[in-house]
Amino acid sequence: MSDRSNWGSKLGFILAATGSAVGLGAIWKFPYMVGANGGSAFLLPFILMVFTMGVVLILAEFIIGRAGRGSVVTSFKRIAGPLWAPLGFIGVFCAFLIMTYYSNVGGWCLTYLFESVMGKAASTDLALLEKTFTDTVSTPLSAIIYQTLFLAITAGILIFGVNKGIERISKILMPLLFVLMIILIVKGLTLPGATEGLKFLFAPRWDQVTANSLLNAMGFTFFSLSLGMGIMITYGSYISHKEDLPSSAIWVAFLALVSALLAGLMVIPPVLAFGLNPSAGPGLTFITMPAVFANFPFPNFFAFCFYGCLFVAALTSMISLFEVPLAYLMDEWHLKRKSAAILLFVSLTICSIPCALAMGPWSDIKIFGKNFFDFADFVACNILMPVSALFVIAITGWFFFDKSKYEVNLTKERNETWMKVFRFLLAFVAPCFIAVIAVFNLM
Image (cartoon, rainbow, N blue to C red):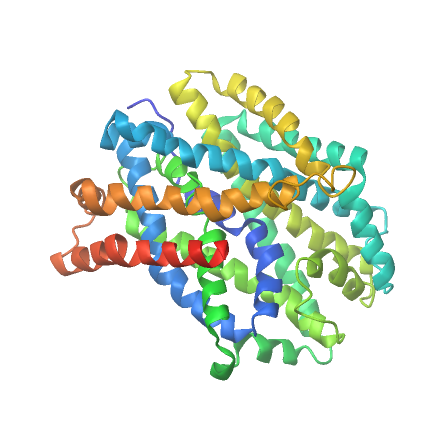
């Protein structure tokens, strides 16, 4: 275990973990989630949950990773014994399954990025934009090509390892992401009527807080922080014993929240300034935003910045997802990193084809009433992630809390009250939190 790679710096680790948590959850999903759930009526509960349940669950996964010094399966086995190893595989399979459709979305981002370079990503014709998006997701050849290219870029980065691959690219991509977002925010806030977007996001409107908005905020907290996928366990396995885990968990949660807020500021004010619908759903990113850019000076430049953000966010998330089964293959199958990356790339290229064709020629093929894309998303997010998270809680909060206590206090001693509050939140509140999300999503 002593020769396992470590992050070269705390900054590199924080940026890599934040890149995972940010992803398309912040850039793509957060703006339409906040738009569809009453703005601040969704945002304020989301902030509260990030800094309570979010931090606690991130910390729990970091604990398992650093204590086990291996992949999810390896860490479960080292901490809890061989009988727990198959339960760890749930996280590995969940990450793989998510990649089969997430790579498809990454391919869409690449498509729109190239379209912006060619000067074709902005238009005031919403019907044309909707047709463009439909063609993007349903044309078989281009969907498979762009999806495969996205997977190849991800595998190519990961071949270089933790320090020269994940950490180095995160130090480049995450600052680039924030710069591009700030450019778009500054431009959007100068538009007449943009202040309505600020009011929509931040002015308290307690009368619009509903059970539905609270449940959506809970679910998005869980999804947006990459919990239950094995990512934070895998990244935690590369954390040096010199690093303080609670402060690292807080930093990741804070930067993920900041990224979501920046995404909201990037999208909502200009959408409202032009009188468009902020609750347009997933199409807000690929249909509504190009109409916004068409009203900007230099529309293709701003479209390029926006889809550059999407691509960077998709890539940083995909890198973290890819590392989960990659670490498993290296630790349990004893493959070299390059061989494991190539094997995963080939496997995912093949297994992702049904999702690439799910909105095109295979759209009539259904599993329990869902196409391949939606079914994979449903199983991963509504079944595998909550179950995996519950096993994480069982290890860290119930059966092996002494190991959690050791990891938490390794660099800085916490008092007994701190530990009691942490265990209460982890062992009793967090399972209820996850159960409510799971039941709500399955209804």
